[in-house]
Length: 594
Image 1 (cartoon, rainbow, N blue to C red):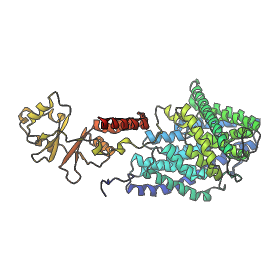
Image 2 (image 1 turned 90 degrees about the horizontal axis):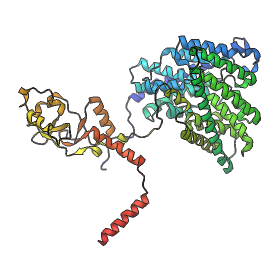
Image 3 (image 1 turned 60 degrees about the vertical axis):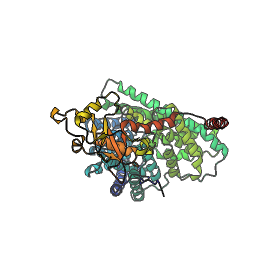
Image 4 (image 1 turned 180 degrees about the horizontal axis):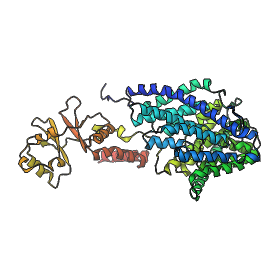
């Protein structure tokens, strides 16, 4: 076969095996950390609300009354002190902190975060905070992966893989959703789709999934639903407005959250007191609707079974949204996935009487739509809902709702609830993943063929005069000998420090002073650009693969822009292909006549 390049589909090497081996203990440790976090939450809940030393999981709603309004305030005070004198990184729900470490912190997380984050989250949730355990375990598992990566000699990109492996494994052990955890890594955390990162992340999630029955008491699926029948066309059509409504709720929640955060920043006292103020709002909200307190998995389960009236669900939804937004804006510690699932399911109960199909269907649809719209991770939302409920027949309608919500929020929101937090710290994220244009073109596609050369016998004085000629547009030229073989390169900067007594030296005298950087015709432009960046040069010679002395062309920085220009043309240049072909046919017909 002819013209078959030597490049493969992926850039992988034996380092992948090392990352897979490291991902195994990360998955195992994340399982242990998840178990410890849930036990801590149970202990704190029992101490605060039931005054017993027990690790049993119980809801604060069982004993909530007027006397317990101040319990979330006490929890907020403790968290504020931990953040002020321990680490400010424990504030918030964890995922933005993980994103910041991945993209701007070389995937380095401090060991104390791995200790303080689960402890602060256990205190926050155990004292009634309206959060889930997934955000803290994502950050804690990620911190362990990062720490392990810091022990060994790894690149920051490899540390990122281990950090995300720990975060995804943590989510797996909390919810029992390994596939959704891998997709969350792809859609939100990795910012790439490469075997080097994807396989170790999947390995950690599978290890956590295998160990989950040994560390968790709850069976899977977490929220079993009665079998759903095949969906009708009317149900699929109804999912579109439900998805748009979920997108609208997502926009409202995100807007209210960050406006409340701005309001907290305007308060005249130190931020360490803010979680206590947020705890007061949580306590008052819990007095009117105790079910808004704590993780609330039992509330999600009841909504998915179609229990409750639209009026009670609307009341719950309003109070839950308020206390969640105020508490999160105050800088306390806790996850957002469980609250979003809860509010989405509540929205589905409110909408169910107006929609076709069984009442238990729409809480699931609303839950998926809210997650897809709020987190901008539609595939994760769909697979997450399927793994939580094992309702495979709901797949088409979940896709409709999730992507409807996703499309709505993409149009009306610049950033998601997760990336907005990072942007407010001065870092911009871009979540569109495309093939690098430099990967699509090869060196031979952009190089200047048959470039102008200089003779190896030219004196330095002659070369200096040549560079001063007005028509010269290049700052470097290949040096070839009398047989046409490449033997070096001369640039204008090479001649700046030449002494007068050296003017009669030949061009070849410059060659030993610099190592010749070359490229081969079938190498990608990305490889060439990376080589130029590492070597600090503005141009490279393209030589024959079998004969390194045979000059084929030259690539400069401006040549590499050809790949980008092609990409821009494909993105922005609009034309009617049929009209163009018709004009070409008419032109050819006219040429034949003439």
